[in-house]
Length: 311
Figure 1 (cartoon, rainbow, N blue to C red):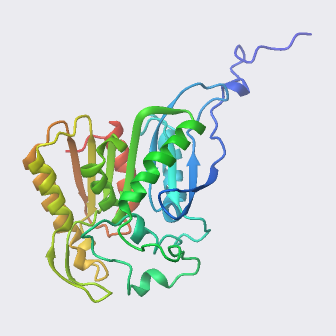
Figure 2 (cartoon, rainbow, N blue to C red; figure 1 turned 90 degrees about the vertical axis):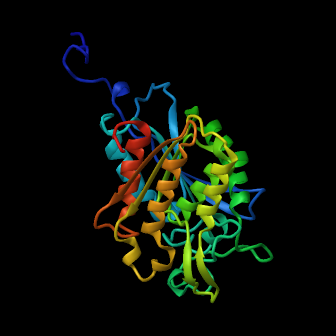
């Protein structure tokens, strides 16, 4: 008696079945930031014999958002009409708390002239498991060192350990992470080819929780103005920006003027017509600073990978 050929009976051989490899967690100590980072990696669905290489999407605030972004990514990748397969890399901190990075993000995502959004903000510091910067190190303005960590340590590690497609990298960040994305776009453009910038911090008007008063402080809009004036190109870069239409109604975030400053930034970038830049932008009716986050991830992935048309 001979065994049946699985292919002839309509049964797919196990080696040909798609599966999601187990999520991996790495603790990566940085020489550029006095910090050990928790790096979580989701590989896309693939066959066990696959030799395919994949683009990589890097996201910040990994402790808070990796789980929901992973779930969304897995569902979207089930059909390439929604998204092509990609590797998802979340940058977080060594704690099981989703709020572990509440304070440290104020260091890693902030840059000169960015208002201090950590000092005195009790809402951010009321959770157990929140980590702080190492004694003797600066708690602010660490964006350049964070860029160095990503460029010189994280990306080489991911490229060495996973089947990545060289030069196919996407950045996703929300709020301060969105501000960091624009800061990187204007200062270290080559780090990523695609930028998904969700509800970015661009301006501040009012008094911070730490008692510092700002009068229409357009810190990121001024950076955009300086970049535009430089005449530099952004050849081959896709930038997707989004915001919730009701973000400015939340008293906790009102001073950041997130919705109105978003429209100002998009207007400036469109008027500038920066050579090579493909700009896509949308506002989500009825969404707040929190609820806009997962929608931005879904729409942003589709926009930069070309499965969704955004004006």
